[in-house]
Length: 489
Image (cartoon, rainbow, N blue to C red; front, side, top):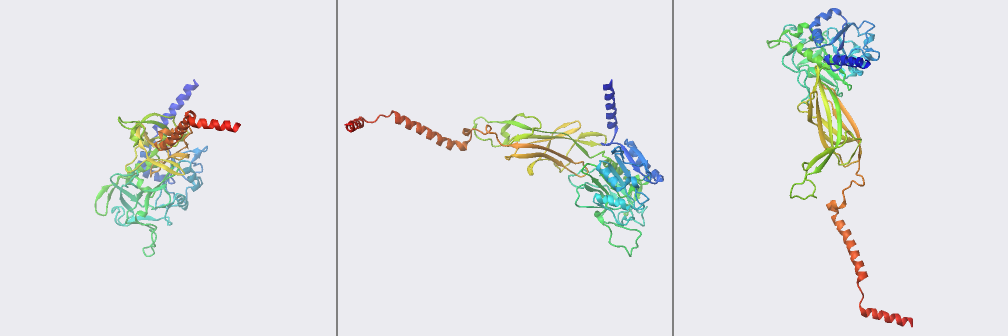
């Protein structure tokens, strides 16, 4: 009875995990200070709930708001709206938010130039190497790419195309056709030293950030200009936690989801903010771009040489194509020998919205294996060898180097917007044992030495035979006999 009860609990847990669209969980905490603002984002909330997310709305002023419960995450995802006060209160300090990210939580931070950005949030973003303007009311404007209907004078509603890939080898989760309306955005600049941050949506080359409260005569050098400004930024920590900075939370409002805008050229178009909001939250809440390693295997490959008819059986094979695999050793041994043939395999799965599927390497990219001791001795591409319903097996075969020591199989795959893969398996590589060296007669370079040795042996035996069995002449024997008789008298 106890077994069936445990089994039923396990099935309920599996069904709960299967129904969640996110790879890590469906609990979302929405920090909203002004309850009246909730109705402005009704379509956005409805889209999240349609994707099986459980939304919990809390005010930052409440004392019982907590991101942790019994040492575990109380919510897998947090959406922070711009506060009207100086911060989010004592329950959501920058340190608590940083601890939340370090624990694996995902954060979507929305900014607005109208509400201003608290200094505590600016300090938090500096921890991620993301900088905000010192002016809390700074806004991004563009006099060439703006909506002539809603921003005819201020030019602070930018009209932009959907973003492209950040690199040729990166997956673009935010691309597509259509125009985005980005009203009253707060621009960010990203540091160059951190590989963990990336810009999802950049400002046009003609845009710049300035404080609208300053007069034109006293306008100083702008905070940043052109593509230096990032309107939507992303940070993916080493523990795969995701932090997204949305420069304009207003672009998620109902009125901008399918609004009719008019560019400076006079063309009327519909915005695609709703599709972009879905793509953004899918990545931020780990519905896409999540990789996991199911298994790692390495084993020795036993092979024999194939000799063509009429060829020399003792000559070395000119290439590895002349060998035939005859078997494999045990999985994941702790020790190999130099010049062993080794097969390495890694099984990777990718989560896409509601299921795990085989991982496909993006175009212009490679998944590589390193066999290293301090520095790599081999760096080899891994090729797809097999596919299961929810994973892809990548493998390669190589020969261990002629160097003994402690080596490691390493797969270090880190790309923008994909969770990192870092697998390391340590093995020992030894020399040949005393009975594993090839016999001397099998080595053609040793044949002169073997010939010299045997010539000395044959010569000594022949000399001994001649010495023992060759009789001296009779005259010499008679002379010796006479000499011996004479000496005795």
